[in-house]
Every structure is written in structure tokens, then in C-alpha cells.
Image (tube, rainbow, N blue to C red; front, side, top):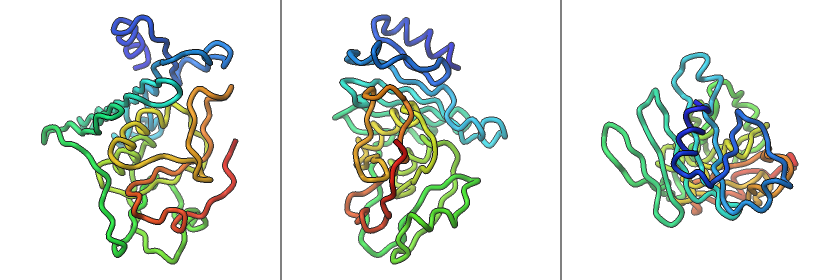
Length: 225
């Protein structure tokens, strides 16, 4: 998957460098002045791929001036593609055709839908969620597919506690932002791209509708730096 993506992107845009999870990191000294580059995760949801659940995806993002400008996520087993461009909206293509995506409306009354891993222990989520609110849990594999689920209104938030790389969030951050949501670190600060020597993310939260009082719903905790 990495070889195919790299070869095709190199033919399409020979002057744009590529960072991929499968190739390893490029030093900050080498990439700090890049105005744009492709950021790839050829298989997001490796565990789901291995067990054959189908909940894995291919992530392609174009990072411009330190922020995701284009995001494309394809889920081969589901025959679904999500994509977005900064300022152009977010879309989903499937057997049903092409649909523009928006995060789910919130009226202050319904349960808040939380996307979780199929193997995630729900009691661990309790320490990060305010039990003054009611929650519904939706299990799905792949970090990026959970973020896309929020983008199309199928969930409201996703808390990721544990290691991820910038390639895990780049494409889905563009998609989610264009659908009306956002991704922040666990202290509600913006994620960063191409700013640090490490390409690892801090813990983060993917959030849907801004009408939900997220600072009350989610308890901040010290982010992994």
C-alpha cells in the first residue's frame, strides 16, 4: 500500500515531498521549511486489518503551512471514501452516491454519542467523561474512521488516549473541520503539524458540534508531550 501511494503521488506531484508512517521520520531540520508535503498512513487500523474486521482505512493528507489542507480517507472493505479540502466542505462517496457531510445537530437533550474502539474498556472512559451527561457508545475500528463517523453525524466525539502519529489525524482533521468539528489535544489546545522533532501526537479529542459544552462534558487531563 505504501509503495503504491508513494509511486502515484510522486508521479502526480514530483516536487512535493512525502512523509509516511511506513518509511520512518524525517528530521525536523530537513522538513521545517517545507511549505507543503504529503502525509500518509497506508493502513490505519492495522489490528482491524489483521483480524479481518474491515474497519481499516488508507489516509492521505496534504499539509500546507503546518495545517491539513486536503484529506482523503478510503475504507476498501466498506467501499467508502471520505474527502475534504480546506474551504470546500467535506464529502462521502459510497454506493449511495456523493453526500456532503456535517456534524450532528445538538439540542441539549439527547445522549452524547461517543465513538470507541471495539477493544476499549468503557470503564476507562468514565474517568474522562462527566457523568452529569448521558452517553451512548459506538464501537468502530480505525482512528480515522471514528473521526469520519463524527464528520457524517454518526457520533459526537472520540477520545484517543495513547500513542498516535500525525499521519493518524492529518487527513481526518481536514475532513472533520470542513464538516463543522475539530480535533484538539486533551487540554483543548490545537494539534500541530511539522513543528516538533517527534511526529507523535499528544492525547487528543475529536469533537463534533460546537453547541455541545465540551469543556463540561470532557475532563481535561495532562496531555502526553
